[in-house]
Image 1: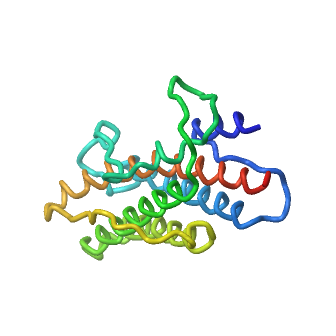
Image 2: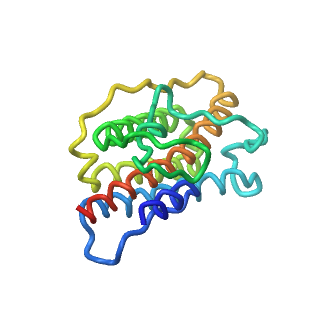
Length: 200
């Protein structure tokens, strides 16, 4: 079962547990999945330039990916199984360190998106609505995931706009693609923690 859970997570599929009343840990996976779905929905809509002006004027899919600086979430949150879905070897799983890194990631992206929204012309209502829906999903996850509530806040780098709207939109594209990748990792990690809680 643990191998199935790990492999499912590596493919970006939210991890599932047996059907039973939601525990605190399972609530984490529910809201982490909701965040991933919302993020994916906003990103896909933004990539369609016929429907969105968020990335108008450049091809977001051709740009690089930026993930939260100095975060160790992918390595720290690797489950401690001695089996892998790829060529990478597993490392010892430290739940507290994993949750600490996830907390830092969520703080970074929530702060970054809030800062970006504040820098926008308020007439860009659809972009503001879409990005605010992501920060709302982050806040909901933080509020309803008890293990994250019990984790001390982390010092994270603050994103700062460059002051040029075009460059900031390109940076937003890179950041959102990075956040999507990180949200998959967060789903996998919280699913693993949830499975451990169910089996304890």
